[in-house]
Each structure stands twice: as structure tokens, then as C-alpha cells.
Length: 579
Image (cartoon, rainbow, N blue to C red; front, side):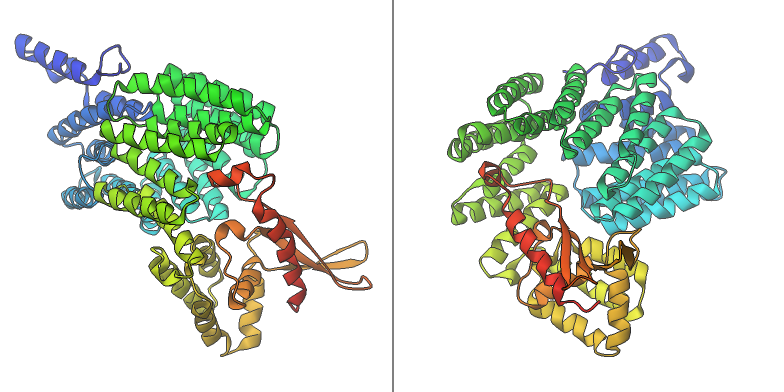
């Protein structure tokens, strides 16, 4: 079954029809769908989640661009083609990487379009790095491409490159730099005057503002939505509406979040976009649960799942497993964890029977995070990891490794943590930045390391940090105090109503915990920030406790988040720091 593309014909049907006309009547290329039209069809199909259609159109566009000697078009088509092939598990990311290198080597840089084509090949490489979970390499490739495209005056492509840099920075937990990249993307998009590119750039700005806690995130998302509505770009509009729903939910307005999420869900169902349906449904369920409407959440989620499965027609389809995850969330809240565990096992079997290996990985991982039985949880996670590695799903592989790390840390076997190698490498980079007093590199690495601290031992940090600090304690401690705090605009000292307030650098405080034998993982480092106040009769500590947005299934049944009590106790450690 082929989804209908713009123009009223499926991509394969359009290609066959035009080819038949050409062979039968001797018609020239001008009467066929042009390479550019095929590229646009591929991009539109990707937006609506129709990956197979996107691949068919991208392959045909790729061949035609090559025949025409259009290196820029070829690079753009290659990015669509490679991304679709990896998504459909037709090629591994390793094989895709080889293809990209081979095609990049063929670019004639001396040609008029050579430099732009070469930069766009960098974006194809970045796309593959994303699939491989290599955020550092994806970031470098995207920034290099953006800078090269800026020199060539290719504003539209430059904006796209900066948008990819935003995604890489967010993967590395670097909200401020993600926002800087998003602003660069918007600036480039506004130069070229392409409203779709501008809308995408505004969406990147909104996302970066939201994640980094910046102001006017909602305004940026509304600007993006308005542009997409003018263009009748329904999938992009739905993405903007989902982001707006997330913002309302984060600000505690669950009714507004629910209304927006249902708007997005209606658009996603209209376009039969499975992944977007799942994202919108998850937000619907979250808002319903915030309104204490778990029964209604479950009923709505089960209805949507039935529709998505009907669309899939028994075949592997993007969106089915993600929609099942939303159902599980509602099911757990309404019927309890035991019933939900039985359901996730049933879902695992159903996905396996339809050959949906990505979905099976997702459900096995879900089972690992939900099971109260440690051996079952560990076994499920290991099986999920093995299957994710086998099919080359680096995104899920990284998430499962994080879960396994938590399990090994809980068992006191941190040396077996699958993220330990990454954590040790990041720690080494952090120490090197400290030794060189490279503030920017230190801040960037500290943000990235935030997701891997629980894979480090107490002695790892002690050995690494003390070796450097002992060379010049006063100087290096001053550097740490200056660069440890993660709030970009915070001043080192403020005086209010006669009292002096100083922040305790976030990373220094948690380094101290680890050195003292308490290694908090990222979900439990909830003080942002802590302060010491002076000029009272006694020193007082104040802090803001910010709980993580995500919770495991079992945590949702608790009356309050377990991080809350620990978090309000953590800030008392700030009294121990001499500021």
C-alpha cells in the first residue's frame, strides 16, 4: 500500500507512469517529474513518516541528479536516501558511512557548485553520525558545513546545517549553545526569505529556549506554527503544537496542554503519521494524568493505538511501538504496575510476530525499566541491547546502556557499566580543560558528562581532579568556582536588602558528593542552583529543586517523586563550601 504524495499519486506510481509516457511517446525529461520534484516528494514523505515512499523518491532523484551532473541536488537526495535506508534497516550505519565517504570523494570541488556540494556532503555525514549516536562528530560536521555554506552565501542550506547543530548540542545537554545555533539558523533563514526554512528555524529556537529555560519559548513556537499554517504544512504544524503542549504542561497548565495535544493528535491522525501520533498521544496522556483522569487517558490511548495498528496492517510500522508506550503509561496509572507488566509482555510478542524489531527493542527496554524483579529487569535490558546492536539502532542502544548502567551501579558493580568507557573519556577531557583553564571547553564537557556521572567511581574523580588541582590549589579552585556554575547569566555575587548571596557552583557541589562517596546520577542532581546567604545571625543555604521531566513507570504510582526528599536535603551541603 502506497501513501499518496503531493499531486495525487504515490511516488512509485508517478515514476512508473511518467516513465511509461516517455517510452511510449518519446517524451523528454521535461514532461517527467523532475529530480527536484522527486526530492521534494521524498522530503514531504519523510515529514509524514512514510519512510518507504521517501526512499523510493530519493533514489530516483539521486540517479537523475547524477545524470544531470547536479552535485548539490545529489548531496541533498543522498541525505534523504541514507536516512531512510538506515531507518528501514536496509543498511547499517557503518555501511552508510562508507557510502557517504565514497560519494564525498567524487565531488568536483572546482566545479561552480563544488564547494556547496562538498559542505552538503558534510551534512550527510552528520546525519549518519546522529544515527550512530555520535553527537560530537555530528556537531563538528554540522558546524563545519554551516561555516562553509555561509562563505558561499548558501543561506537556506546554512540554516539547515545550524538546525542540525542545535540537535547535536541538545544531545550533549548544552542548552545555551543549542540556543546560539538556533539563532544562527534563524538569521540565515530570514536572509533567504524561504518561509518553510524560517518556520523550521523558529521551531529550533523555540525548542532550544524551552530546554535551556530561556524566555519567550512559547512566542517562538507560535511564530513557527503561524508560518506552517500559512504554508499548509500539516506535519510541521503538528510538531509546533506538540512543543506548545509540552510548554503548557511544564508550566502546570494541564488543561491548555491537553487541548493543544489533541489538536496535534488530530493533525497526526489526518496525515497518518505514526511517530507524530505517538508523540501527541503521549502528551495527551500526560495531561490527562495531571488532571487525575487516568481512566479517560487509557480509553483514549487504546482507541488511538487501534487506529495506528489498523494503518500498519500487520506490517512493521514506525509509530506502533511508540503508541503502545503511551498506552502503557495510562495503563500503569489506571490499572497498576502488575497489569501493565502483563501488557508490555503481550506487546513484545505482538511486535515480534509482525517483524517489528525496533518496536520489540523498545518493549524489551520498557519491560526492563518496569519490572520490580532485578534479574528479569537485567535480562530484559541485556536482550534489548543485543537486539538493538544487531539491527544497528544506535539511539535505542544508547538509552538501554544508560538503563543498564543504573542497574550495575545499584548492584555496586559500576566497573561493568556499559557507559563507563564514555564517562572516563569525558572525565579525561574535563580534566584536560581544567588543566588548560579552558573555560568554554570545561563548561561544554561538564554538560555532556552530566549524563554519565553515575558510571564513575569516587576514586576516578579524586585521582583525576586532585592531580591537577594540587599543582596550584588556589588558582584551580578559583577556576572551578568561576566555570562550575551552569547558569549562563548568573552574577557571582548579588546583594539584596542588605544580605549577600553567592551561588554554589552546581558541578562543584556534585563533585563534592562523589568525592565523599555519594555518586548521584543525572536524575538525582536536582539542585539548580544552591546559594549561601550571609549577614544573617547565621549562614543560611537556599536552593531550587528542579525534578526531572521523565520518570520510570513504577515511580508514577508514588504519591511524590523520590528525588524531592533527597533534593531538599542535598542543598544543605552548600554550607560546607568556602565562597
